[in-house]
Image (tube, rainbow, N blue to C red; front, top):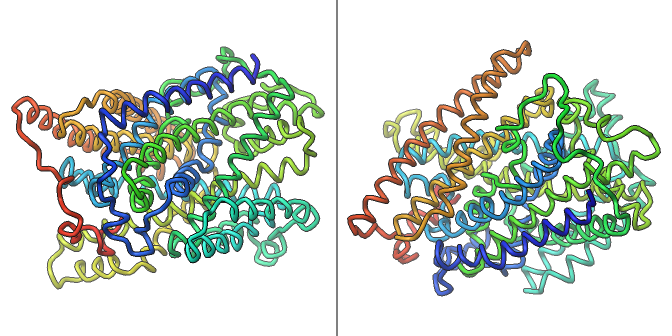
Length: 604
């Protein structure tokens, strides 16, 4: 099969989805109002609530959600064949992710930029808020652990990329100062910064940066040193105002994403490569997992991802200048991530064969079994992109550094955002516990301190995933990646439940939200049961005594949350039949509603 035909076909469907389906969602489902005063204006504080140009917000949201996951998931899932992976990515992006991301931004904006967990309490029930926050805590912990491991692994394998990655940080801070202080457009400074970053690629090749001497002196693994450095970095950067590093680096990374996609597309077109993998693999090795339901949780980001709702309601909704910008930011970001997932599929089925041509062998030798599929998937994407880049004359060494720089940049931005979101979640949980504790008691004092102390909350947000990242076998098939994907898709389903109830209460047709909601609830619940049985049957003590209980807890929370959502939906439909007008939070004036939005305890 021609890789060019697959890519152009997917892009055409994405374009149709934005032109028609997102327009339907904007007008008929979410009913966007250009005159609505967004929280970015109502609670403007220069730190979290910052009215921002829609192109910069798009860059922030897109790069924050398009981390390493839409690369890694498809790179594993092509094990079953590229056909099912492609179909799930394309249909999931258009009909599930687009509605999910778009809707999460709108509902948050209409509720004072509250987090999706707090929205569950407002829209579904108070119990739902607590349940959702616990699920979010598990999800973000795994996101941070997974992305940190990806970055550490790429730094170990490609030390030539470390210097260009590090240079991005001061350049982004400089861009932030220019844009925010001087009110200058971000395009030119960010393009200049990206040119400087790429100019450092040859320097990185001449001066590869490793931490081997430190690891040797301490007698520890090299990856451990990188993990310590990565989490230390995120502790400090997640404390900075969004305009200082997060937004400008997002905009630089947006230009980088555009260039990366241009290189990949040009390489595919010039090389006219064919996909070497089977459309549907019929000769699965013994012991391979079934494609149903695991395909739909192996590819989470890139089709639909609950992490997006955390970004949408955690940072994006606080920066939205106009409500109508939600369509551009939310739906188009989903299409961008879907495009990245399609490129990952092609890189791991066509591009990687260019890179591997001199080594002999074929695609089935690379994906010899399920364990091999789960080993170093980000590395296979990097090799595939380097293969495509070689078609347009880019030397293999530079292509590897370039592709590594792209993956690490996206993963690092997602990690920064996720640690910030985890801090919000920890503080939000602390507020709930504080309010329910005995006044003046030790529990009340402890959680009151945690609710207002950003430093301690951030430290917890860093240390918990760091501990998880130290567990061996993070990417071994059947362990942390699958549990991450299941929790991610479960969160997406629960976010869609919040959106569905909100839409139904307002008398609009919720079918566009209910269909992906039902699909995800079924698939994730099924996957949780399959994984639980696998963990319990495993001879690996890690799986039996850590991952199995964690899976069981998440499954219990999922069942409870699904029941809460079903009850809320039933009440919403009953109110519609009876013609009862809902209590409309949308109508509240921001000034009178500020109690629940402006304080540090509720800012999430």
